[in-house]
Length: 301
Image (cartoon, rainbow, N blue to C red; front, side, top):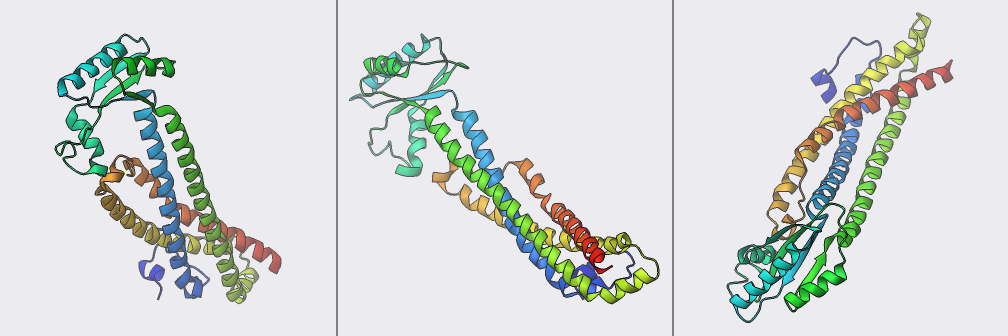
């Protein structure tokens, strides 16, 4: 007895013993594997989309100024004040925030380890600059002024780097979606072949049903309900296992300090999207089964 038979999902009396087919035993597990792969690929696409949104919101329209440490703390603070005063005079600058020494040290901890400042490393001080919307900044002129106020200071523009990274990530996002589509296509083809085999196995039964007046649509509906049940079962198994894998990966990645700044986590709403994989697999199985059986019956006439 198959898992689908024991669960009795969406069971209605049928004239065709479809649960006795080999497909009833193997098809749910084939669909489960494909649903697992589709869920992982879809989660990858949603994760990359979340990275794009977060980076765009946090880095777009911003500059970072690095002021190297001077020979003394007082001289470093004096340089920072001159740079801040210079920035606040610029009408295109909307916000200026000087990161504390502790914040600057925290940013390099994933690479240099904890307490990098405490062991005497000359860490630069950082100034976070927010630009007004649609502001046009002459970076060459700004770099010249900043260097005059604090020799050796550098101005880093994030937009060019951000655009390049987002471009690469978008290619990955598109590739993940293509993989999802290919997996569903492969699943549809698998269901088509399984239903063709099942229709041949039950040829004698379908002939009898035709003789007593059953229409093709009536016969196809029985295959359709059967495929829907198997698709939903396989989709639930595959997606459930994929969810466990994704939760485990999230917890592992959350402990890797060098990856924390990349925000490699799925937003809450994305789990609702992933939950659509089982019903999508069931609907795909039902549609593919109905189409295959109707075409097969038409050829038998």
